[in-house]
Length: 131
Image 1 (tube, rainbow, N blue to C red):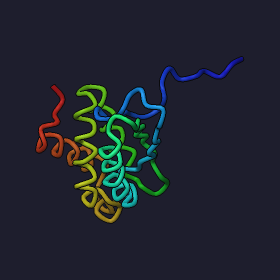
Image 2 (image 1 turned 30 degrees about the horizontal axis):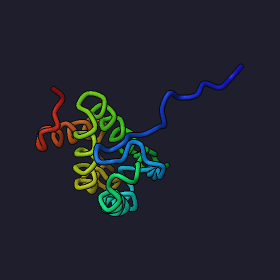
Image 3 (image 1 turned 60 degrees about the vertical axis):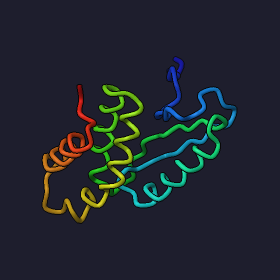
């Protein structure tokens, strides 16, 4: 029995990424990780500097201990599938901007439903609602 091979690489490609480039950067991201947040700013600068010559794969990766990250990535995936890559990466920026609001200490006494309400509010506040 053979192992199924995905029809495409995992992750998402930003609209300003070079689709046919020979150089690819795979960026594994946890939306709750402060280091991913710092790295994302740098990756965006690198992508802009090498515009047209660099392909980026943005790959969601939830780390152990980041309880809210999974649901954030799920919400992000829905945005990507329903609204396209522009809104997907706009929401990435929004989530990193508001990362402190869904950190583990903030959610110590909150429920998953509180997180879903926060995510829904952020999509509406930034005009990323599902049409």
